[in-house]
Image (tube, rainbow, N blue to C red; front, top):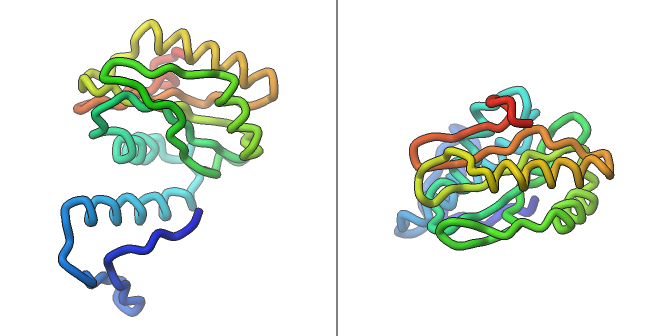
Length: 167
């Protein structure tokens, strides 16, 4: 993952940061996301489901449209990359299993964690969410890629299909 240039200078002696210019709210949030992403990609994603939920909340939580994403994982369930794949409206996004399979194969992923947000703020999975999860699980299974979870991010809660026994 390429490093983004940030509006901060890092002091390697005491691990502090100094702003290089006046910062906007977006500068601070963007830099925080970059630092968290960099740290998160070093760890085994399945060792800490709460960290996975926090990471996905950071990535998807305040979006105004529904966005369907995937975390692509290697055979030891370490993050290869996170990618936002499909963008929708305030209440839905069209998800194409063929495209998810193509992306997973292009990253040589052994497993995936599916994720999307509900801009309404209510994280409760819909029947459509359950249907697309089954379709994706079946399509990815054909090429030996496991679906470990599908996480729905809402304003006040995050729902895991795996924790609910829906996978």
